[in-house]
Length: 408
Image (cartoon, rainbow, N blue to C red):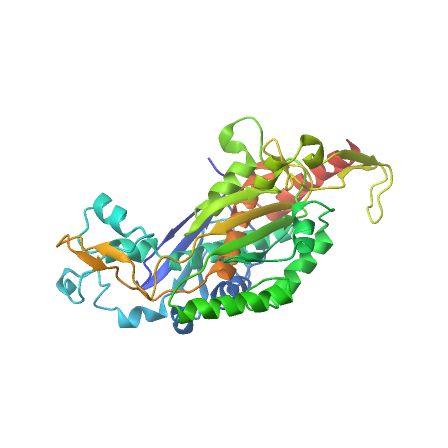
């Protein structure tokens, strides 16, 4: 049983999205503004579709917070779908509204349409695409923002940036800092993140950002779509989150599952990832050092440290005290303005796939969603380790452990 449980509900054009997050300790300062900041980030990015012009997501806290602080009970969040006014009959739960809009019978390659229709015995694909839509990730970002707020109480920070869209990549000098060929310090990672936040495609390299925008413009003109790769980092994580004792307790497997659950994500790497398989062992193991005195640290006993971070902050299923670095590959959006070939599920005749309003490129937004999923996973592991019913209790447990680690 996990320490932090969450569930989302709602359809893309339904009345609203709902999320419930259980396990957040009491006393955590939390406001709707804390959540809305990340919701706004998710809606940004060059190459987003028309839906982002309609929606201006706002999180309404329904339960679990009183007078600005969590009270220990499940937190319920509601995000209204403003476009629902145009779908009142089409998405109505009332049987009398059936047939008010045409059924979708032309499955889109690359989507859940065909498999979902067969699995759930649906002859209107809208009953599948409404829930499988990436609109659902707005709620994940909202719940992830709460997890981020909790983790920030312990100095843990999470961010992301785009490193590739299409075939255009950031420079190796930037990647080296992320992948561990030189020390990935918290300060440097946060600096890269801040630069990325200034970019319309959330890329830390200005020159590459310009080339990516040109590529997206080309895709728009050709009625095509683009995928790419983003990185997520987590800093300030203590040694020992996760475990080696069972397959489902290993932290990298939990993080990989969380990122893979995001719509259109087809690959995940931890640390150096697949590149590590091309090297000799002596080239990619993060050697261990010990210092009696560490600049800027209060303790006098010393500390274990690494000069590299090829492992991405996780060894043997557990955090090792270095920043966690993750990478996820997103396929091109499968809904194209230039429809692909398909087959009508009713007539079985060849057709052009249905078109639903969609993005040209959503990689910048996917990075923000990746942050949320990483935050929820790390917060769960953190509460497993330092669990308590209130923030003050969790802090006592955490402080005691940190004191032990510093004296080890």
